[in-house]
Each structure stands twice: as C-alpha cells, then as structure tokens.
Length: 258
Image (cartoon, rainbow, N blue to C red; front, top):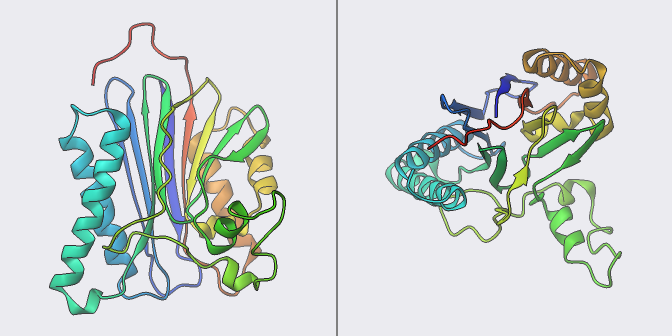
C-alpha cells in the first residue's frame, strides 16, 4: 500500500525532548511506525523512550516469521524487558517509564499495540476518530463505569483523570491495547500517531487541519499540526510529536511477501 510518511516534533516548555520515533518502510510497501513518550516528571524519560523504541524495532525485525500481532506483542514484551535491565544496571534510571504506540501496515491491513495515553487517530472522509484505547485514569474509570453511561471518574479532578493508569515501566504490563482483527485501510486514509502534547489541539482542530488541503503532503500536515500546537502558547506545553501516514494508492494487485 503506497504511502506518504512524515514526522516531526517540538520540545514545548519542557527541559528535554523525551519523545522518540522510528519509521520503517520496506520495498513491498509494508510499514512499521513507533512512537514512545518518556514520562514527564520521571527520571530519565528520554532514556526510557529510546530504550523501548530501539528494542521494539530490533525484536520486530528479528521475528519476521510470526504473525503481525504476535510480532507486535513480542516486541513490546522484549522492550519492557530491556527497560527492566536498564533500570537494574543504572540507579539513575529508577522510576523511568514511557508510553508506546506502534502500528504495522501489511497488505493494506493495520494492526497496532499501545500502552499508555499516546493517541492513534484515523482520518477518513472528513472525520477523525481515535483507534486505540486511552490508558489514563479517567478513561479507564469511564470504560469500567456501571451502570452503562455513568462515569466513575466524573468526581475526580482533571489532573487526577489525566494521570496514567498504565505505562511501560520494566514491570508487568496489565493494560495493553492490541486488536485481534486488522483494520483495512483505503486510499486517502490518514493515520496520525502522537504524544499527548499534540492534544493541545482538539480532535476537531486536527480534523480541520487534515481537511484543509486533501492533496497536501504528510510533511505539510505535520508542520501545520505542530505550528498550531505552538500557536496555543500553553505555559506548560509538553513535548509534542506527530507521525502522519497518508495512503496514496490502492493495495497492490499482487500481494507482497514479507
């Protein structure tokens, strides 16, 4: 599935850039996109995100004989082990962690694995929707609410609701989003992967930017999104990173190999 891919980031008001990215493309138009957001306020968040992205990429490449979902889950597991090893070997890294969202596109089909609150959006036919689950305290409480429609997190302060309910910390991960059924992509679809600093812009803002010029490149869209985040000039603006993946053609008539 031919695609136009770009990514970019801004540091915001933080002292360091703690987001890390990897984008891999094979000649047969298969793709792997990874984004990790080192946890702000934790020791060595930049080390955590780098460790997880590097290990995830390496393991995914080594396990080409497995199914896409098993490759993604296995890569996540090994990345978590790598983080554990790094923490054990360096006292300065105790307490570090990161979110991660990774997507694999193969033969026009999308699968992902994610831990934490870094969003994965699909823009299709003028509408933007989040694909992956949000592992923040508020979202997890709302999902578990009973009776249906109630919000167990409604009484919590906004700051508490935004805290992470899960992340990659080098210990057992209880909340993982990894669908069994792939999503079929179509020509014109746009995938956006972001760190939560991008959410300075609302879903409506992002949809408007994606809609503004249907023929614009992914690079242009990434630039527009980051300029819009910067224009909000938030006093505590977090690191903001975005990957844009635009499907530019139909699935090949002859399915590629690995």
